[in-house]
Image (cartoon, rainbow, N blue to C red; front, side, top):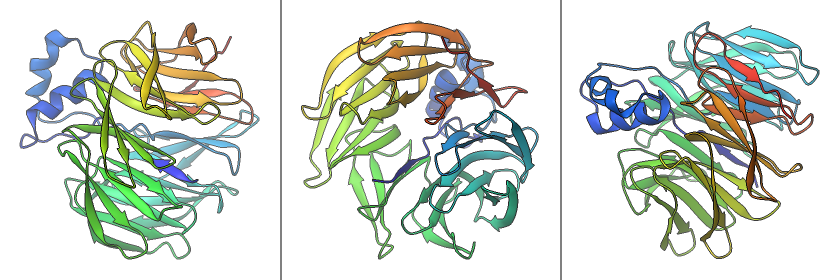
Length: 366
């Protein structure tokens, strides 16, 4: 199964946007204390980050980390050497096609997508988008790239063979999940209680109820779609055959999701509680909850080693959780406010995307 997810981070906010949304985004992603939320909510705009700022490409063994401030992407080779490739202004997210070895970078500042040859490490095309791009995901089976646009109802679809884009009226999306096998693309919007579902064979658009407002991230395992409700303490387990919704009670403000495919378990980061819930996919119940010494916002798993990495954005740390013993092994420094994690499954190196002047940190693992 080829699943690509581009979960949303902090979006650019205008005065006409929801104040509640801004407060929530600032709480989770800018690491401000609760006492300062009122002042942050009155701000006209805020930074633009995305949890797909850093990704591992198993097709080439390289890691791609966007550098928004400098309009570039850092390409980390398996041996550790770093190449810097210029993209358009304000790169915000990246997705890779492991079959074609192409990487796609959404440039928020220039309303474009840069296409990078993953072998030559150079930009071979620049594709205009309908508006300011944000989330990006790849369907490796059809060689199509899906790009959402901030404050736009147009979803861009880029043909990977020709690098030509078309538009679909699918509504604004903060996150994209591609299910290649079922020919579906799921679009999440924070201010909705439904997912938009695109049939990639017919381009038909339908709605799928998700049980509550404020959808944050999603993953699909077998015939179930898991969606976090960041405003409360639940994750929706949606049976895609029947569309029945089962609410799973987790810790407060669940945000990130990741699957441990070796055990058939789903891990949920609970930001406000400072914990990670482990869900059994078969029973759709929480097996256990592991406390973390911070506020986890992003997750990544090294299946071979049985380790879960939880980025505590506010504390500038990453907690390493042993998934066999279900305990925090160690919490390490991870650069300035890590908000996304990529695991190189070939070398087992772990990289965190950082706010500030340094785009990424190679974690010093025990």
